[in-house]
Image 1 (tube, each protein chain N blue to C red):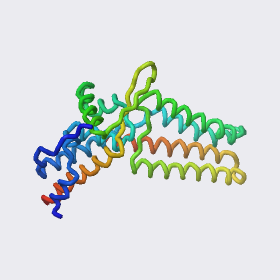
Image 2 (cartoon, each protein chain N blue to C red; image 1 turned 30 degrees about the vertical axis):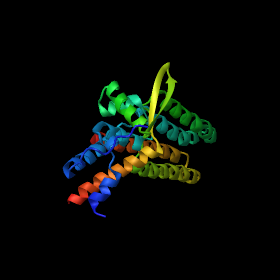
Image 3 (tube, rainbow over the protein chains, first blue to last red; image 1 turned 180 degrees about the horizontal axis):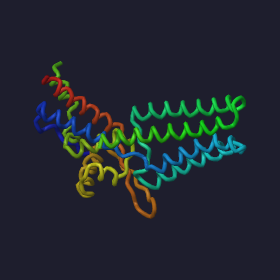
Image 4 (cartoon, helix red, strand yellow; image 1 turned 120 degrees about the vertical axis):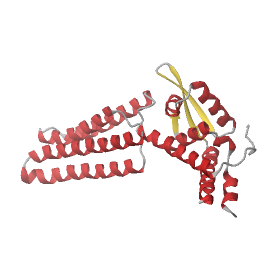
Length: 149
Length: 102
């Protein structure tokens, strides 16, 4: 293995600071490239379909059990085909996604709980909330990515 | 130990070259990144990137994984454990130089 010996003088504090800024900019530029918009559309469609299936009297478990793995499989397949399609997450993105997931699950659970009392229209509200949360998170991430770029 | 001594302990000439530092920064956040993606992020030609990647591979800091996708040969780059440690020590050394000055 070839390694360069430390023959060059150490950088000045200004040069070291410039190098650190360069590193930070490079890291930001990596996160600036987000997953393609259609991945968000697939996720939103899936989380919209589950509550809507209950509204239209279709067995939601079938959609959840088939659609979940199929949707996830499609995303993984697409990310393997295109080198830039992989989903990239930083700490902020993971926090946002966790909060979004909790809201979506809470929406589905409350829909299941309230539908018996208030009628199946509750599922329509649940679907609208799910889509709003997923699209909202996507818009926040893209806005952040544009700033990073 | 003074800050400048601390800085000297992790400073790495192989990694410090601007393009190599940026390659390591990308691979540190991206785990495994496709060659074309690195090229696009750095804004350099394939030959320039190949040269720098070659230096990092020879130093044992970067590994290459080749695979055919859509009838095209593609190369994925990732940091080795040694490379990740060297990169992070180098960043710590740069920070120590900056903080030692303040």
